[in-house]
Length: 469
Ligand code: UD1
Ligand code: CA
Image (cartoon, rainbow, N blue to C red; front, top):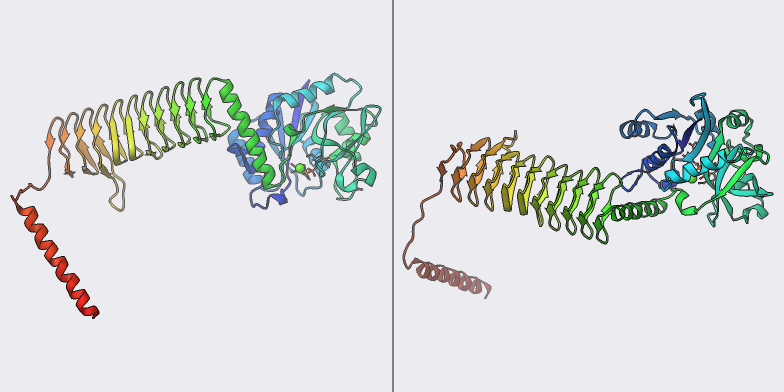
């Protein structure tokens, strides 16, 4: 027996007040539709997403994030949830025995809830469909009417009589159907309702007592219709993600923000207010301290990111140290035990194992050999106004403070660049490069200079007050 999930995602989501299709809004760093499809894939082998508004964007995203088990079908125009499932059925494998139907705007769903509902349908030979309901004060949800313990109808909010409107038993919008029942009854839906749409929920009445209602916890099925719902769903999902990381052996400080795709190995410590985004991976025993922001960063085991460092699309080697206040821009790679300290900016630069740049530097488009030392105030002058050029520093080289390396340029292995040098020519391995103006000392000159400068200042002041009178 095979089951397929149909995810309804063709609607516009007007109440979001956004040009982005509703299901593409982010919850824990990925589109909310992603959470729904991922939950569905835990329960079934094939997912069919009904797309409409913004379908290029939605289809493109699904193709990039999932494999061929996820397909799309277009509903245009959108004539209601029943119409959406009619269109989906035309694209479903004939061998499909059961069909789960869910909405793309319920990002808190999980695989357990969906597997559970399929189980309830399979366990009940008299049921053609199973649905989740909850006692809820949400006014917009459909009312589930019961007789002898079986749901007999769902009344949409806008179609309710006064008596029905008072019913608190609400439809949570997730269903499991026998495929044969859908094929037989979908064509019988009508648009005789307040919205003139084909309601999927009318199938409950058409099941004539062969429906099964399963009570559930409302929070798991929370729909997102507004930005306020989105913020609430984001907070819930992130709280779950953090709980799961803690459960798996990481320490997570208060206020940390962690996207869904992030992975964290045991014994890692994530400090307060750290933000881990995208495909960031934190290795075993690594420490990401207060306020660090990481976007698509790989941090290897036992590395240490000190407070307020900002890293994107970069890699930090085992036992490496970064920060506080370092900025690693895309394609920075630190080797094992490398150090990058405060107010150091790197971009497209590799530091070999044990290499150090501990203070105040710009290292762009560079390659720094193992155990090289880059002094405070060093600048890789990588840009000539038209092109970017590469700076290479050999293993074990020493670059003194306040050095400018005018790229393209190479400092050989073990070479020594004296403080204050502007390096414009390659430095051979083991050579000393020194380029600075010779220093002159003038004995007793400081007090004479001060006297002269003070006299000039006094004269200027006197002249100004004379003009004022
Ligand atoms: C629906 C249910 C309601 C239930 C609620 C739970 C119906 C008629 N009503 O109401 O009983 O309490 O969900 O959240 O089903 N969509 C399409 N094509 C369409 C229309 C809608 O793909 O033609 C999609 C939407 O993008 C959305 C989902 O279906 O993801 C639900 O549609 P929506 O209009 O939000 O239904 P609700 O009013 O929430
Ligand atoms: Ca909805």
